[in-house]
Image (cartoon, rainbow, N blue to C red; front, side, top):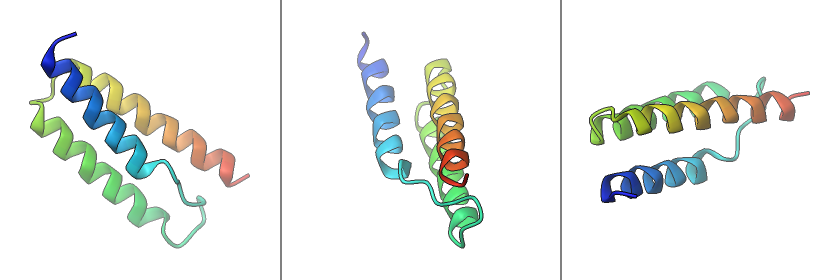
Length: 74
């Protein structure tokens, strides 16, 4: 694994840690949570110049968080 790949995965892990507690879909913090998550994704993507690994891993994490929120909101 290259140093770049290690850095990307480390940033992805930090992103997941920061956003792993999803709010309820109908909760008052939901919109703000997703805006902060989108802003963080953009910053990480820009940091790594939208490397293909960044795009794939972060989109996967974002989709996973959406699933977690839907499950929480059932």
